[in-house]
Length: 227
Image 1 (tube, helix red, strand yellow):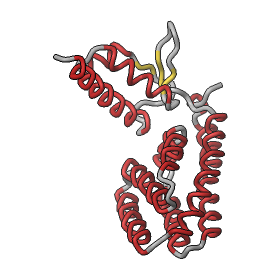
Image 2 (cartoon, one colour; image 1 turned 135 degrees about the vertical axis):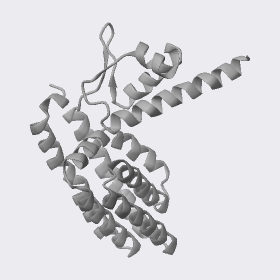
Image 3 (spheres, helix red, strand yellow; image 1 turned 90 degrees about the vertical axis):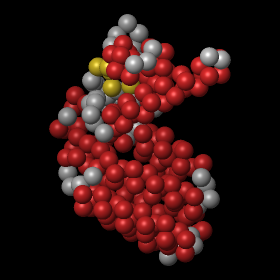
């Protein structure tokens, strides 16, 4: 096997481990504070420790794992400071995205948003939190492309990673999907109507809903948060 082939094989193993653990953490199959063993994961996937170590590093960079020398690696607990930072960045970036999306919206934009919202409605009806979460990402991606700032989606995605578990936890505890779908519908209506300020105003209300969610989860599950 050539060095290039070995690199590709190792990268594939890293991706598989990373994507599986990323999904398990965000879908709350693994909870904040849960211990995770490099050796056990390697055995589970039938790979050496190196791809697992690389996958752990990627997850740690996203704020999902806490790697401590001489201590067990664990699913990272929520940090209120990091959540506040993510909210600030998202509020700033997404407000401008919605403004520009409304300024650049076309008939094709409305078609794409309506199709996405129809799928969101089906996810709500089925009670599928995971499906709804993926469609939420797709919804914001449509807005970024319409705003002609595709790169902004990378910023939004990185910050969303810090709060996705909180959102999933709140969706699984409360019937919040219909409320969020209503927000998305109103944002889409304002964007399609070229109402930039209206879209931004609804977007801010939408993002602000996280505040009450954080407080409720902190009260119910304080051990999920960093001291």
